[in-house]
Image 1 (tube, rainbow, N blue to C red):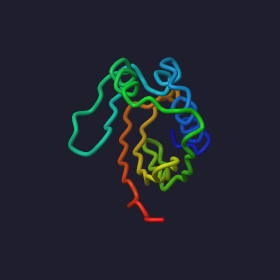
Image 2 (image 1 turned 60 degrees about the vertical axis):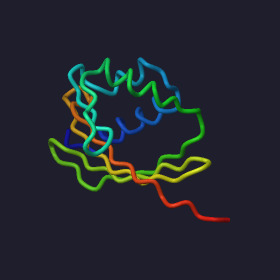
Image 3 (image 1 turned 90 degrees about the horizontal axis):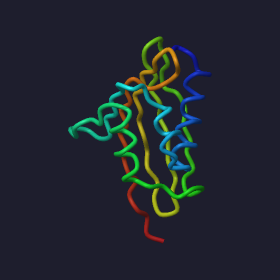
Length: 121
């Protein structure tokens, strides 16, 4: 890994897969034997097929999320990414740990999401 360009390309593909809900696009993000940790203490999603199946449970509407992100750290084996996902009804801070293979697919992806408190208007 070790490259901002490679990490940026993956995050861009992640955003497109999120908006499209396309099973092929989602699957192409991950290695066949990838592990996806969706939240602390939950059992991970193991393998591309299970990741696609689990992701499909959270159908997303196109154009309803804005993702702002920046790398905290990129090394040869790990990217740490901090981001903010803004939806019409909520804002969520994200911390991602991303380990890519040589093809630019995630071998391991950890996603910690923290919803912002709702503000009365």
